[in-house]
Amino acid sequence: MSDNILKADVTIVGAGLVGLSAAVAMRKAGHEVVLVDQQMHTADSPLTDSDIDWDQRIYAISPKNVQWLSSLGVWQLLDTSRIGEMQAMEIWGDATATPLSLLAEDDNADDLGFIIEERALRKALMQQVQAYGVRTLFGNECIALNVTPRLAILQLDNQQLVESALLIAADGVNSWVRQQLGIAVEQKRYQQTAIVANFTTEKPHGNIARQWFRQDGVSPSAGGHCGILAWLPLPGNKISIVWSAPSQYAEYLMQLEASAFSYEVMQAGNAALGQLTMISAPAAFPLVLKKAEVLVKHSVVLAGDAAHRIHPMAGQGVNLGFRDIVDLTKILSSRHLYQPINDCSLLKGYTRIRKADLSNMLMLTNGLYHLFDSQNPAVQKVRNWGLSATNQQIIKKKLVREAITL
Image: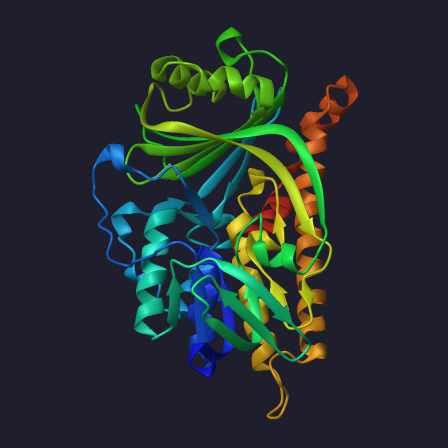
């Protein structure tokens, strides 16, 4: 049986973006790491330059997290011709003729964020996982987990055992690890469906991200639009959209032909970039807030979607997951010489810091959702006045600084 026991300092379950980044960060910090995932992953899958081959899964990465990924040697591996720059943002409400404009230069910065394809970032992370010599166990399911305050023992379906002082659960919103530990999840359905798709645009986007908040209950082609729509700048005359629409309306949108769907997206965005041509078929997924009741149990830490999933309107989902790993790495590096990495006081510090960050982000996303979901005319008037009032330099500068430092 001892031949089947693999020992490490840290076991990471889940090889998504957060799990992969955790593997690199923990190995860089000097820990012996084992990365486990039931799917097979490689770093040599080709990426093409074809317009029709743009990934549906697009992320907006904050400048602060770009710095962190650069410190891991990851960002440098990306193809810069496939990275979009977000140098400004324009935000419209129900009846605002002039959008709230946030410029990176308002805080003497070059960018508010960077738009990157999921598969490109995953490939770069996998390259660093291999470069750092992280032990990977891919292609086998987890079947059992035994956890104590001192140890975590994971069993795979090939009878392999992985024993470690700390286990990081980065295995997604339906986390197997979280379920095994009986950690409850606070859940709330937003009654919205997110639709993602990519387009070429008639006019240059100017590296500006555009977002519309409206709930007038009218189809864009009939002069209105529903939900929260974001246009994110990709390289060249291309954009990626995230449309958080009421679920019934989203069903209607998903049934449209490509040209009709493109027209609805164009109208919803006030035809700001002229004609739109779809280059990747739309995909849809229901929006649900999920938050684990605890982030740490014994020698297990939850991170990424296993710990929290928020509304995509702020584009902070993966950034929040990266910050989980940044904070965990910092906390572990602060321990004294004889303090184990699963020390209770260290992990309590992780919980305290991450809960504060998550609480602030939930306050923002939930507050905006309820504010713009309301059909009350008084609320609509107040929210549009708020957008107009925010167009003051001192407030805009603060908002830009917050976006850059997330």
